[in-house]
Length: 171
Image (tube, rainbow, N blue to C red; front, side, top):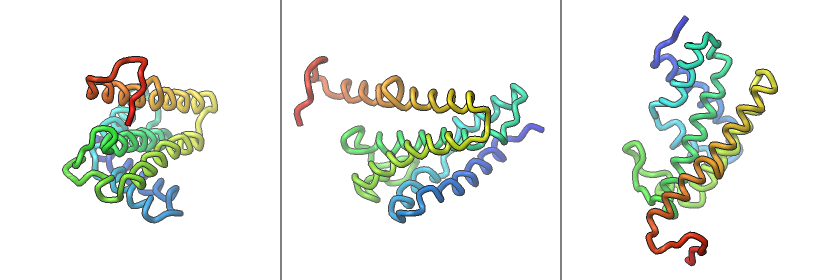
């Protein structure tokens, strides 16, 4: 039975709230992470993923944690992207940016925690181990120097017109 977008959004939000137990040991970190992660985003990437599984007659409920990992990775990128060292954004989704609420250090650690917990969530999937490894590898590739970090580097280089390839930024 196919679910609608609203049902998937609710399921993802509920599961993300459950996943927030992963960061229960540090209240301020938990608040900062949840401020961005559970900020009532559209969850469009993870919903498209689940709808795509439906189209291939794959049981989407089995992959709900992958949808959560997608949102965790996305939230990590948003927190880091808003930092003064990157885009220095003051708002995100019509709310004050994470670093302006929790400070730069806590925001940075929140993004780092989301990134590393993304891989923890993926490692706990109850699926074929080859498929699990492929997912972990894909997420790592897209988060690292072939994906998010590469894209952010290009943003920084394009903002700094005085920067020349092969030189170091002096701050």
